[in-house]
Image (tube, rainbow over all chains, first blue to last red):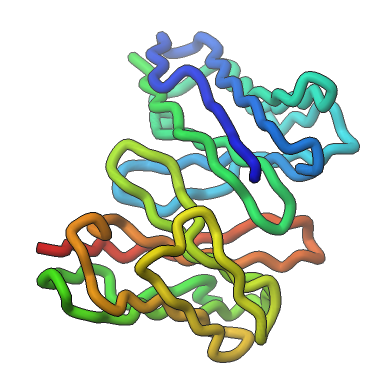
Length: 109
Length: 113
């Protein structure tokens, strides 16, 4: 089955700096790669996703890149703000998703 | 639209007791999922239902059973609860036509003593 590794497990950045989270996956049949944000005690919520026929996607301060050959994808958050502090999860698959272990992001004012 | 709803929000069980977690969605989605999330960890798939009338095992199915009652509802049953099943359980749904995005319910926090 699919295996998703996510790094780093924790990330502390200064407000205004950029944050980068990286994930690798194992199953070349995976064709959908979403990123979820989970605030403490809340449900995961989709922030951006990318499909296998696209290399990069951007939505305001958030961008995701996908390298299918190397089987890795990354989340980039620019101009970080305190409200970006949360746990972020990557996932890979199609109709069925396998999630990474999560990255706890702390944005220091 | 309520989206994905789950009941109960909290539950405490004793080892060996049984219970059913309920999930419903009002988005006319075909696929529904049950995940568990242990402290400081990611989401692990227990069971999923790609469409009404079908169910399949996920990564951690042991100790659980599911029922896709109709297109809206997908329940998760613990027949004989164990302390290792203490976790937060999330239900999710996906309308495949829109590209697999999964919408999550608010979660059920289960403690097994």
